[in-house]
Image (cartoon, rainbow, N blue to C red; front, top):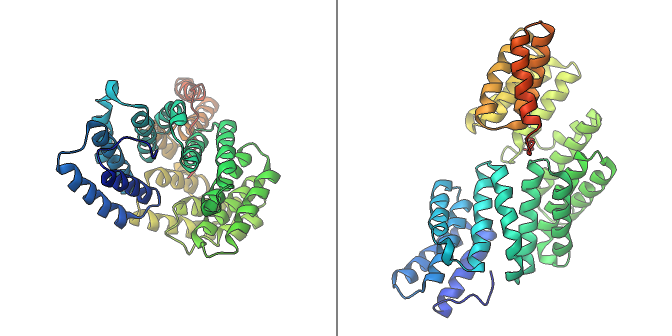
Length: 365
């Protein structure tokens, strides 16, 4: 946050800065306490309109931290209503936080639209780390939408700044993971491997095990993509005991897929059962359908086409474009071979329509 933003009092300025800092550091309890203090100050009715708008924006960011997305959206919409009267600082945070909100609810296309609106206002931000964090966020959103080259460019911008500030080594390590994932997409596997092992080396001198788990997961992803299944499994199994890992289902999915691909159906079934148990605890409908498709492809082949048809309906409803295109393309080929040309044309059109979209959504989780 800019230190030269005009506030009504020094005390409130300090509170807003501290609140935002603790939100960014994900210190929920401290942020809650500061939110209360800010509310008490604002209740005195002495703050000017600019301060109130900024406080509303920071409050929306607080809700994003706490995953109160509906409340975040309400506050963002409220500030948007003041658009003709917003200053550059407000517009920067408005577009930034709206982008973060949209990304959090998986509306990746509109998230990058908002992040694109942020860039013109970067000149009004003096904090280099704030800029690096924006580049980091933009790189992540672009990666999810398969804008690989642009994502890598923004990740490089973030890395350039983070490496100048030793206190932000953890963010530097995470950004190395991001750029490695982009290199995997480019089939630049040697570069990806270099960045991932560099990230792993970053964590070797300190206790940051969940970051290590993330690197193990992505090394597994790299080697799975290369077809080096033994190497992939060596890293992926290291993740299994960490059920709190955000991409846990993705890890199990890769292990299940490898087991089926290698013909070890008993192990594949065990991994599938493990995933379904996890899904009951932490529902994820996207992965439910991915696992269902994978299972019937290898185990219940007679149900494969029926499951694909149902999956298409789900992915279309949820705007999961990449999965929708993949399933529709396979159904089109199947019905064409069956000489059911009416259905084949329907799925060809469905697949081609989303193939020609500006956005090709790949599920990266």
